[in-house]
Length: 409
Image (cartoon, rainbow, N blue to C red; front, side, top):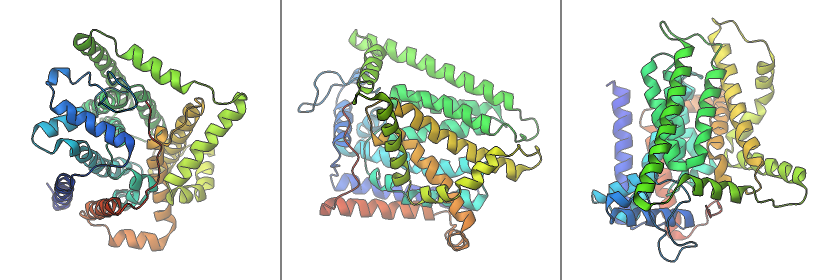
């Protein structure tokens, strides 16, 4: 392992170890209702036989009773396993959330390196921690950080499978993880992986690499996720005698399709404005940098594709296409449903944040010089640990945080 990789690994292990120690010793509990619910479910699962983990119940005193079928149990199982190993059960879900963040901040720059210069890609490890959404979800037990990590894993596997088909296994792992963590929201995984390949289609692959192998790998990964859905249904029926997916899908889509206004067109436009506004705010300040760079990007998208040998032009075009397509996909889909929530478009915040941060680095010599000075393997972990401590102190002092509405599904 090269020196930089060793330093990065050691820094993240140290930061996570310190965070896990702080969470356990301080008996941390979030003020976010969803986080408290999910942390309690994971803690109760750790005390129950593993055979029943697939069908946990709502803890007493919550807004519903009976079996928890709001989502699959993928986000609970790692926390329950950690508690089984002896970590404080009520804090295990928060500890795993920290691990998901670290994984995302390590892998997302590796993914970005396929499209942007190496310095700009590495700088995303600390620049993305300055987004408002990152501060909001710093110490949580929600699904969103796990969902983002699984999506980045799937995209990274898709990119690497353009060179080596074996990396399709990574794509499959990401899509299966998405399914087990967030259920129906996993459909965005294959769509975004396909968008990535479409955006990259003009770029040559290294010797012996072929774009077709990546498409085949993505198709096999989708099959693996479908097989996992069938297995999950079988295990759930075996444990409870009841179906899971039919109840879950009908509940999710049923609540989301309840109309909130008489004028459907106006409501859909209002929904789109809601999500676009949230993306501008929760990806701030890099969202503004992306807006400032939008015209050159649009010009690049309208211009004829560069020749295969013009790598820099093609990668810039691919990045612009992927980010624009990601925003359009999330906003278009969720604008159709009148039940709105900031968390629904969570990955879009990071796509826009990453694009805007890169644009700012390329356009601002001052920011570029700062990034060069901070280009050290340990900096992302140090920034994360500092922000983590600030969050714990602010929570202990009762300082208000950016509000994300609680879930009821």
